[in-house]
Length: 310
Figure 1 (cartoon, rainbow, N blue to C red):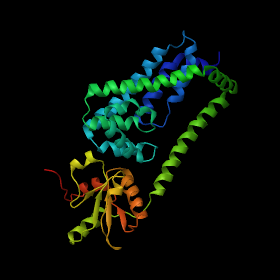
Figure 2 (figure 1 turned 135 degrees about the vertical axis):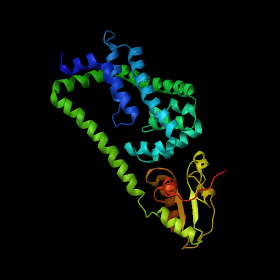
Figure 3 (figure 1 turned 90 degrees about the horizontal axis):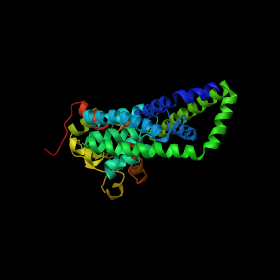
Figure 4 (figure 1 turned 180 degrees about the horizontal axis):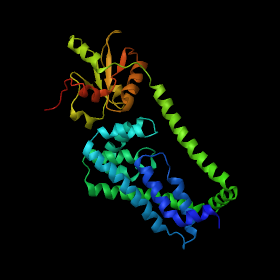
């Protein structure tokens, strides 16, 4: 019996648990392939059983997701920027995940694990939006079962092909292991490159919170657009701001001359949402458009005034 096969047989459940747990925490270590391989090994009931492997994956996922749930409950929306900073997915993950979760609510947890970069963010969103713990655990557990179960099913369905691939890797010895590690490195590098290209596309001149405050102190009235999701606006906004999202962009109408500034802000890393809307406005003919560096969080941190519903 080869070393690799013995390793999988002896520590398969531990490998599944650790891989799923780390991925759900946000690390770029895909667990779906591991679950597919585990599914292929289900043909040997004395080594693995479907319920045991499925339960292992679900428990690992729910533990990691619960950590993000309580983190979101404690720190609120601040945790979103932290999540995107440790993720290799493009920063749009925050805006897209917020939009999806706000649209469907807790049932979004049923499909979140099928969307790269959405699992940990959706769990934090569930906590920050006040989803009840029991509802979160039920929906998250069912979602984890659907996700892990589909991988195990695919593995068992294509067990012969996977077995042949494993045999080839075993015959290759250390070169087979190096090939697997190389594939993982290529995956991580591709995600990093995708993120860098995305940020480069959104690179444009920003205005600092100090510069904006000086403009307002001088009595100037730049057009200020708040691009955050509706539930985030409750925390307050920059005085005089209008509210806009990508979905309501076409409904926005305002008059401005060529020199009048249009300032956009959000609460996402790298001002992604503000920059995307700024690009869209520039295509509509508004050229003096600048995202606010640091967004609303930098404005508050500087101690400048915000308006709210109170």
